[in-house]
Amino acid sequence: MEVPLKAKLAFLLFPDSYPERPVRVQAIETHLAWVFLTDRYAYKLKKPARYPYLDFSTVAARGFFCQKELELNRRLSPDVYFGVLTLTLAGNGHLALEGRGEVVDFLVWMRRLPQSQMLDHLLKGGRIGEGHLKALAEILVDFYKSCPRQDLNGESYRSRYWQAISLNLRELETLGSVLPGMDVRALCGAQLEFLERRADWFDARAADNKIVEGHGDLRPEHVCFEPPWPRVIDCLEFSRELRLLDSADETGYLALECQYLGYGEVGRRFLEIFARISGDTVPPRLQDFYLAYRATLRARLLLCRLRESSPTAWPRLKSRAGRYLKLATAYSQRILAD
Image 1: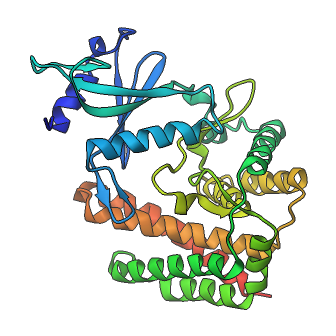
Image 2 (image 1 turned 120 degrees about the horizontal axis):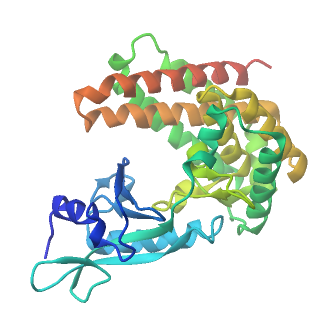
Image 3 (image 1 turned 180 degrees about the vertical axis):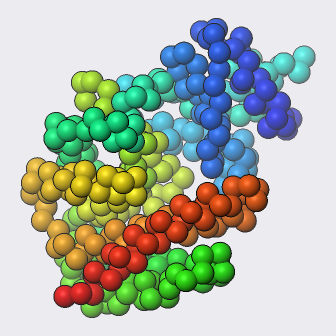
């Protein structure tokens, strides 16, 4: 039986729905999910969404990707992700967590992490030091060493970027009237030219086994410095293709997000520490390419959300996309400077 999302949300907002009987339940809506926070735990319900890059439209699909999210995130946060719970519907029409009725959805069950210890909050509070960055770099170096190496040759690796940059260009040109004055053809053209001009660098990264199945969405809001070690949560579970990337691309993405928040020096210092600990020396212009590509991609994804958002959300989305495009333009100009 198909249960309306509205009914599921109402049930999950009710404190007595949970075995721990919390005092209150806080709901947070993200692009692809609803997260329900109790005193000690977090419960994540995937939206029945369908896009070209993912399909959560069926109960079975949501159950599959909940399990995938659990498995993948336990790689970096084994003590945070507890399991996958069923949402069931009894014969009397009542919903329950882990009940005996028909399974109508699934939730990822997690330990609630302290918001004050998330990297974005620490940055804003000026509470990030060398020790934090070193600890995170060490965790990630060990993680990338443990990731199975991917059988991807240089040509295939470059082709993935060529296709992705071409898609960014097409989408951004379609949305060009939203942010007039931004020369997206120039910035994407620079990235494509660099990809061709420095093909040897990309080929070398593939040959040196630097392409791993990583986290896929390494951002400050996904990093927690709860003692005794950093946890990295909320990996990109719905696409293995998007998780296959150069470790320098992924760590560069984190540095870019720090810069976007206004803490570029922290991001740069993190990359320096990561390079020292890993022993992986990345050509500076290649790192700039990764930053340019990521900033362009972030802008494109934000602008694409205009099509499904209410007009009240448009100014914020356009403002954020504009900031990413400025960063993308700056890095795209640098990569062809030499």
